Length: 297
Ligand SMILES: C[S@@+](CC[C@H](N)C(=O)[O-])C[C@H]1O[C@@H](n2cnc3c(N)ncnc32)[C@H](O)[C@@H]1O
Ligand SMILES: [Zn+2]
Image (cartoon, rainbow, N blue to C red; front, side, top):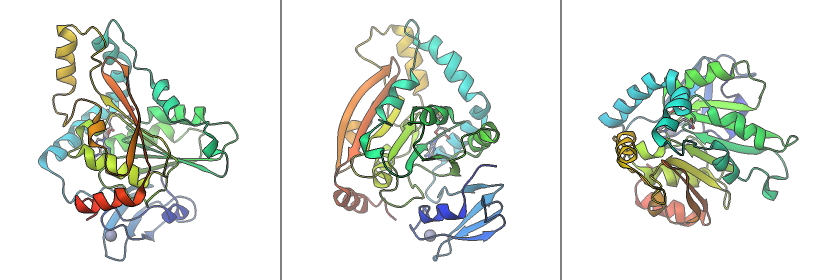
């Protein structure tokens, strides 16, 4: 089974009020199995068959709910469409090379030399990035790889793919990228592929990733953005329009970075996909702006 354990509650917190969570339920020795996580303010988060639903849906719009339904349908065919349909749309330069954004995570970085490396993949879907992250880490490095997603069907898909998998240190939980259920400066690396353009507030998503990232570590964000350096024909423009039809944004959101953050790099990894790398340089400034924007309530 895959999920979270009681020790993980040192870093997991209530996504609504940031309070500490207490466990009431079965299976606390290894993985939390069935029960609830509750904070002092009595916010309750259900855990079912090992998967904690820590997504705060209080401010969800109709569009958010529609997207969730769309991802329910997409979950079983997601990886196949990325593998087979995307290259056709991007022809004659078909590749969207996942290895280039994994490189941007700098998993051999000197700052990771000691202790356990903690990495999070937000909007993990069925989990295509997890093996890539695991393989890119130095063999002996102790690791904890967190995979979170808003959508229950994606989480199920992930859980069935990884149940038999040998990478032991994976944690899986339901979470909304706008309100991550983790403490400040928790992760050594942060990845978000293919989700943020759809967020109702990509700016809040960027700020949340910076909040949970340790200072100066790479935060890597990949999503749809047309490569204007390439020779795009009418079909490319139409396909790109179709791909981004319901997106809030359709370019690298470098202009939406919150205070206390700096761009490391913005590039295109393929005709239809950008890769934005940024880092948090000043946590206090970030938190100040998040409070002003009302993200922390
Ligand atoms: C296009 S899929 C990409 C999946 C995976 N990252 C990959 O590279 O194959 C986008 C994923 O983002 C998730 N997602 C969308 N909005 C989200 C949000 N607000 N918080 C967390 N996950 C979200 C969706 O449920 C979906 O699994
Ligand atoms: Zn709470």
